[in-house]
Amino acid sequence: MRDVLDDLDALWADGRPFGMARVVRTWHSAPRPPGAAMAVGPDGDAFGSVSGGCVEGAVYELAREVTDSGVPILQRYGISDDDAGAVGLTCGGVIDVLVERVDPRGFAEFGDVIASVRSGEPVAVVTVIEVDGSGAVAEGESHTTGVPLLGRRLVVWPDRHSGTLGSDRLDDAVVDDARGMLAAGSTEVLRLGRNGERRADELALFVQSLAPRPRMIVFGAIDFAASMARMGAFLGFRVTVCDARPVFATRRRFPEVDDLVVDWPHRYLEGQLDAGAVDERTVLCVLTHDPKFDVPLLQVALRTSAAYIGAMGSRRTHVDRITRLREAGVGEQDIARISSPTGLDIGARTPEETAVSIAAEIVQARWGGSGSRLSALSGPIHRDAAGLTVRADPA
Image (cartoon, rainbow, N blue to C red; front, side, top):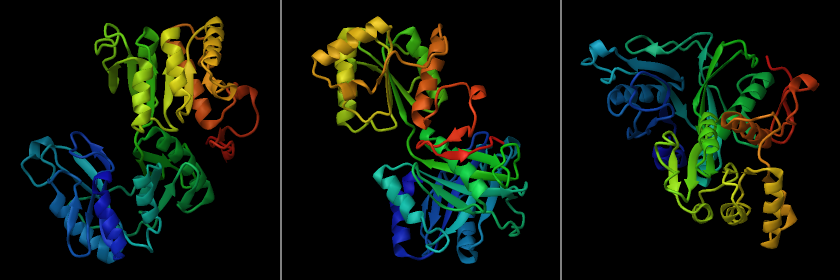
């Protein structure tokens, strides 16, 4: 959707209804990922792509049809590898494409969504794509229009939401999950019951997160860093490992990280800060526990708006680090932002266990949990970032 943002903005500003097709599910070697979009304007102009050219002609005609009728359609395109020469996806993949009409009456929040994407504010668009196993219509089959919930949507920001999927309980459950997915920058299909039940699957909802993955920057290319990088990727972060020592910062030791940087940590972070590449969703894990790296690095880190700044080391190392920061003129309010020793007390010993401990503290910092055992607590389990109850029953 980002690649056709200017075109969508212009179509919206024109004020006339237009058709929008989005890939919502893929199988096998699909050419475009979920969220890829194609728009067809009222004058017949087409923008974007859902398949790299394989089925664009068919989607174009369907978008014109949906713009006229106002009835959304979930269409499946795909053929087997044995039929790769036939009309369809020549790669052998399968895609589900949701085609909708966009206009101020049916999608009043669309302009706000575009504005949020332009400003860098994370926003998720949640759309009902399947009801009671209705599924997608295969190409060549007749379209059915008896699914009243199909296409209903909810727009979710970190601090608010707009629209409804039909019930308060369903909206609450979806807002909760969508914010978690938005924080991780993930786009996927969510299955819930009609009232938000977790053990039911009457509804399939496409959650499109219009936000880049949050960043995790791990400083210090040690064995603990390798485990932390894997954990960060598992949580949905774009992971960077930085170390000034090229003998340690190697792809052999960190084959799966998104970015591997050989530079002095404080210099690299200062460059990222100046470039606007560190925001309030970024987490910084300082695992070097060496004063010549730690102190200048933490001085820069405390100038950022990072959501979490953790520093590894013993309590003796922590006291020495704090003393050095005070001598460097860092104030107590800034020092209080540092989680040191980093992680929650779960008795971690190995690098993998330590990574779990640090990850748990990062999640706690994001959502405001107590860090206590749930079995020892009473009351609601799930709360939002402001500490407000979002779901009292995990069903």
